[in-house]
Length: 406
Image (tube, rainbow, N blue to C red):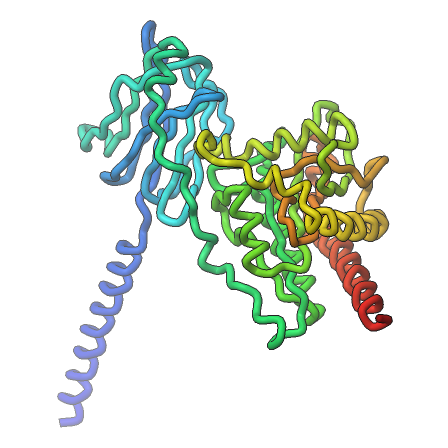
C-alpha cells in the first residue's frame, strides 16, 4: 500500500508540475505586449512608403498636424524592438520619426515631414511568406493649402497622470512638505539625443528617481513625480500635477544641448516675462514646443497660463522661486560644475503654476561629452540629487524660521 500511495503522489506531483508550467506559460503569453520588430522607408519617384513590421494585428488611427508638417499614427501600447527611431534621419518625404508611449494604452508614432504631404493610403497587411503583420503608410507630396485642408486632428487629449502618482496627504494629517519632481520629456518626446545615443528623457528619469529617494530618506518630504516611467506627459498636465498635489516646491529636471559642444555645466532657471538672455529665450522656446513634437494639437487650446504672469499670486510665487534658486546655485556648485550666470530666467511653460514655487534645473548638456558621462553615471546622479536635497532642506528651514518668528 505504501508503494502504491507513493506512486500516486508522484503522479499527482507530476500532473501539478505540468499544470503549473502550462499556467505560467499561458500567463506570460497573455501578458506579452504586441511589438514593432522593424521599420522600413521606401523612396519612390512620386511617393514615400513607411512600413512597420508588427508581431500581431493591431488597430491604428492616422491624422495630420500642421506647423510643423506632421503625420501622427496612434497605436495600442507596443514594445519597440528595433533600434530606437526617435529623430532618426530618413529619406523621401519623411525627415525623421519619433516613437513612444503617449498615454497609458496608447503608443504614438510621429513622422516629421520635409514638406506638405497627403496620406494616400494607410492599411495593415496580414502575414505572408517571410513577413508577419505590416502597417503600411503611403505619402504623396502636395501643396500647403491641400495639406491644411486635410488636417483633422482629434481634440487635444487630456491624459491622466501615471497610476503610480498619488496625491499628497492632507496637510493636517502629515507635516511633511510636498515636493514635485518633474523628469523632463518622456515617451514619444525624447528630448535631446547625445552623440553616443543617450536620451534626455532617460537621464532626467534616472536623476528624478535618485532625487526622490534622497528627499524621502530625510523623512521630511512627500515626493510626487510627474512621471515614473517612459511616458509622455503634456506640459500643462505637469503643471496641474503640481497644483493637484498642493506642492510646496516644483523641480523640473532637464539635460539639453547647445551648439557649442565645448560648453558644459548646470544652470538654474526661474520664470519671467522677459528672458535674461537670448540663450535662455531660445531654450524656453524649445522646451515649450515639447507638446508639438509629441503630436499634440494646440490650435484650439487657449493659453490661460500666459495670462497668469500678471497675477499677484504668481508674482509672489515667482519671488519664492527666485529665493530657492538663490540657495540651489551655491549648493549645486559644491557638487557640480556650474555655468557662469548660473541663475537665469525665461518664460518656461512648465514653471507657470500660479501657486507653486518652481525651478527648472538644466543639469548639464548632452551636447558635451564630459557632461554626458557625468549625467549617465550613478555618481553624477547622486551628486545632483544630494545638492538639490541640501538646497531644499535650507529653503524650508528658512521658511519655518520665518513662521516661528511671527
